Image 1: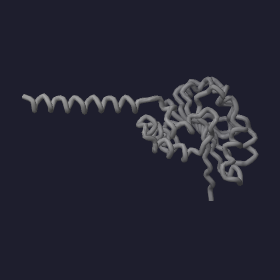
Image 2: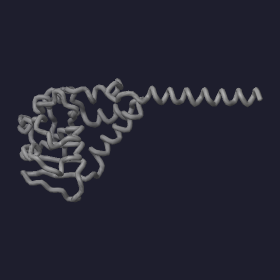
Image 3: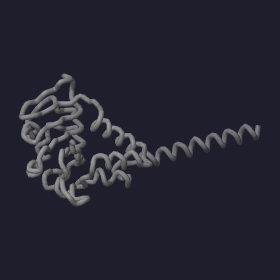
Image 4: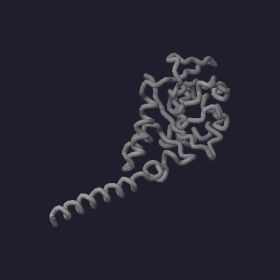
Length: 190
């Protein structure tokens, strides 16, 4: 009988400690130190660095969001393409992503029922002069689920290491008080 009670006590203790450990892990993602560089309101980071940082977190919620961001950015998802002012939705499904060229940014500010579930907006820049364009995030009211804004450049943004965030911050305005995370990606075609 004593062995049975002792065994029950041990099992109970293990279950309680597991519950306490899982409760400690389920804290606010924004409080995770590895994630704070990503969610910090004015922190602008490289997309790949943000994904790596999130996926390396000890917090499983942050890790899951890192894989979700990776999927949004690099996997096939329902996407609306806006190019030269023309909106195309090849899948015909509610998009999770929007890919836009710089000349079509004004289309993002217009009321469009297709944009209601979009989580990632990618603005593609082809030329350095397009860095002078202003993206006003206060005009994204028709993007209520928007989490990530990715500025995707097909050229080197600057010559000094680490200067990209400063240049992108001059381009993207109106993020104060917003939950939108600003990221950048440089992909140079050869």
